[in-house]
Length: 465
Image 1 (spheres, rainbow, N blue to C red):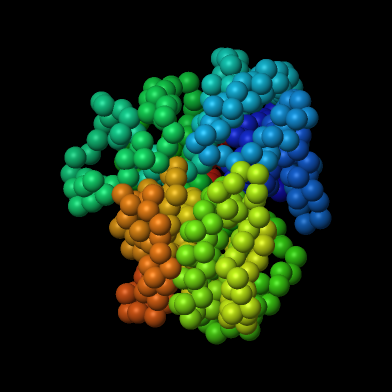
Image 2: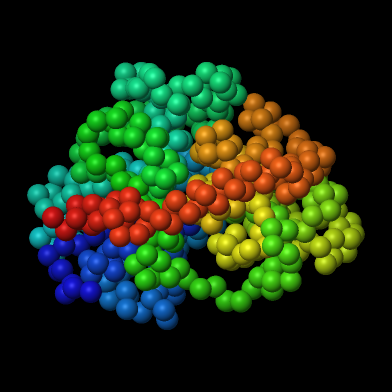
């Protein structure tokens, strides 16, 4: 490593949700590896967790990663960390972000006074809460988009009338092929998304933009985005855990978990992994159908039940109730994991054959990176677009249901059928082969001179120039 460059500081401004913060925290480690000081501007509760993660194996990086607490009342900070990120609470979340704005702007100003160049990397959601910091003479700004390139391009297509579009393209063929089945923005996002996308499109005061993606996965959509904007650099920095491994900074080694012991005792490609993250809620009726589908498919499985899987029938009762006798009946064949589980290690285990998920972008990239095919069960936001990418473009997975029927109950029979297709048919085997081939391409892109390596070099050069 070279000598720390104190003439440059990077400030990161994430949106106050774990998945968004985690992506920028991983990127902070990558930048810190190049001996560039990085400041994470987060609510105190999030910074407390991030500091704990820096201890131990990340000690060498700790000197270059700093934490600036953004001020909020204790009650507001707790609400920000615990509140579910769903459409009904978007207004209250925006109000909370307004309360962060003054502290964010003051912190950025203070950092700019202590360096020759301040690079502010901010989540696109945070654009309107940074005030006029971009006008400071020694400040450059870079936008971070937390979702996929296909979702970003699809939203632009549905928001900006005069978008620069390539009319002869695979995406145009896809739109004609899917027709009304292609997800409409108003079916995935809350009201106001069109105005948000238009505003971002017209914003011209940033120096560049980046996404946690890979040109091996979304090269066509990254090119379409670059062509549509025809302005500033657009970097694809991902998958982040592979970027860190390529810089000899392994991702956090989780404590040995019981589900890994379970996988060690199974045959290769014999286990379906089921997880919906922390933000997706299933009704009690849907939870029961999923349980019966897993029970009747006669396949081995790991089902991670987190906060998001709690029944949404009663806001005052978040008890997870599985069908009576379910756990006893699947004992030895199925494993129920409540709360946290080491997802990347599970996906990367040789016994894992497929992944049944809501298909948020972080989960999507993790599964693709290790060559595990997917059963996509999208729920909201960018998830339906990610499902289109996986099933229609990459052809490494199947959709559990048509997006136009998203509000209908997904039956246990359909769940059972989808699992069997993925695990016990020639069609599923072909998906698995394509997934492994794509994973190998991604891994090769991190070799010297590879496309991912060049992408990182270009991004670091932008920071240090």
